[in-house]
Amino acid sequence: MDDTMHDVPLASFEAKWADAHPEFQLALPFVPAPLRPAYAAFSCIGYEIEHAAFGIREAQPAALKLQWWAEEFARMREGGARHPLTRALAALPGGAAVPLAQWQAVVVGAFAQRDPEPAADASALLDGYAALYQPLAILEATLFTPLDAATIARVRACGRAVREAAVLADALRDGRLPLPLELLARHRLARGDLAQASPAQSAALRDWLEILRARFAMLDAAGGGPLAAAGASADRWRLQSAARAGDPLATLQAAMTRLPLRASWAAWRGGRRFVRA
Image (tube, rainbow, N blue to C red; front, side):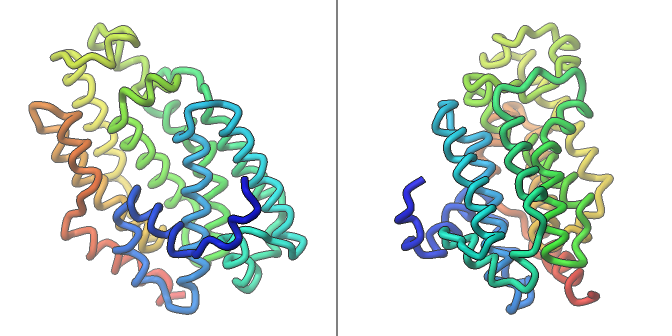
């Protein structure tokens, strides 16, 4: 990664994150003002790591980016952060004191998302995503007490499953299988069939979206803070809309850039987590 990156304003990273996750701008005002810059910086770091894990097709550029972040986390711990996001995070009291092993676990979890094995069932697929989102959630809860790491991890793993379903063709092209094998078997689909629009593909997607909707319904996402709460609310709405649609994939894709009104209420409830601290 180019070391001139230190001249890039924080707002440019926030804009990238908001484009991918519109709930970011909705949730941020519910974070206490003194924590807001560091909270935004941490969220943007998470997005940069996600992009390397899921968004870069070629293996070598993804590996180089992740290795750069591993080195940058070490520099941050030593007081020599170069990136505007890590510099903003290091300004948080205690931000630079988090053990390096916790940061490195995030990088290891990101590498685990590259060329994964197909998952047999829903739990195995979500556990695979948790290899990245659990260490990220532990960091978030450590830095922004009293957020709940387990809640954040579950919300983000389920949210990744929603996003992987929405980019089904791209995920398959890049070697990831966004649905568990048991659903393919139930609908008599081969992996190659999943990229082609068909009644069986739509039926399998509807089943998968219903499984994810049920997972979200079991979560009290407010414990994860405003961003997790708003994201969970938005994803539940997206899943409900798409699972009932004649073309679930197109409906899901269209919903990814939209937010329901109830996401604002959820963000407020998540923000109350800080107030009660």
